[in-house]
Image (cartoon, rainbow, N blue to C red):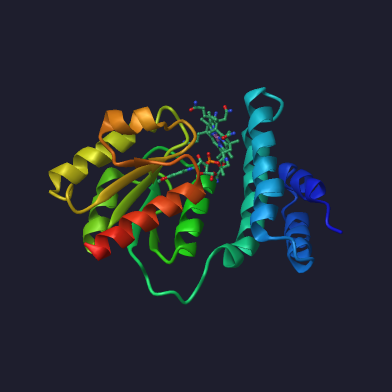
Length: 215
Ligand code: B1M
C-alpha cells in the first residue's frame, strides 16, 4: 500500500525519481489522481511554503521540491485531463511579468483542459502585450493571469488596461488568481473573475465559454 505521507515527504525533499515511482504505484493501486494531488503533492508544497517562510529552507531546496512536484504532476496530468473532447472555448493562460511561479498556473491549465477547453499556455514572466497578441491570434474567450508575488500581482491591472486599449473588453473575459490575489483586488483592477483554486477556475472558465456559445 503506497503511503501518501511518504510520497509527500519525497516531494518535499526533492526526490523526483522516488516521486515518479510512488505516484505511479499509487495510481496502479487505484488511488484517485485527485487524492494523490491533494493529499501528497499539494499538502507537501504547503509544508514547503511554511518552511520557506520560516527560513528553515531556502530557494534551492524549494526549487528541487517544485521540480519533484512537477515530476509527479506530469504522471497525473493524463488522468486529470480528459482527451479527445471537442474544444468548448479558448483560454490564454500565463503567469504575469516578473513572476516565475508556475505550479499553480499549470494546475489551472490542466483542470481547464480537463473541462474540454483549449488552453494556450504562455508560461511564466509573460509580458502584457503577449496576452493581447495571443488573445487576438486565437480569438480567445478568456485571458487567465496567475501571480504569486505581491510585487507582481499589479501586472494584472496592466493586462486589464491593455485589453481595453485593444478594444477587446467586450469580447474577452479576464480571470485572475494566485495566492495573494483576492476578490477585492480583482474588483479594484477591473478584472472579471477571481477564483481561489484551480478547480473553481476551471468551472468558472467552462461556464463563461458555454454561456457565450449559447448566446
Ligand atoms: Co516563491 N514565494 N519566490 N518560489 N514560492 C512564495 C509565493 C512565497 C509566498 C513564499 C513565502 O515567503 N512564504 C513568497 C511570496 C511573498 C509575497 O509576495 N508576499 C515567495 C518569494 C518571496 C519568492 C522569491 C522572491 C524568493 C527569492 O528569490 N528570495 C522568488 C521570486 C521569483 C520570481 O517569481 N521572480 C521565489 C522563487 C520561487 C521558486 C523559483 C524557488 C519556486 C517556484 C518554482 C515554480 O513555480 N516552478 C517557489 C515556490 C515553489 C514558492 C512556494 C513555496 C510554493 C508556490 C506553489 O507552487 N504552491 C510559495 C509559498 C506558498 O505558496 N506556500 C512561494 C503550490 C501551488 C499549487 O499553489 O501557486 O498558490 P499556488 O496556486 C493555487 C492557487 O493560488 C490557485 O490555484 C492553485 C491551487 O489550486 N491559482 C489560481 C494560481 N493561479 C491561479 C490563476 C487563476 C485561478 C487560481 O485564475 C487565472
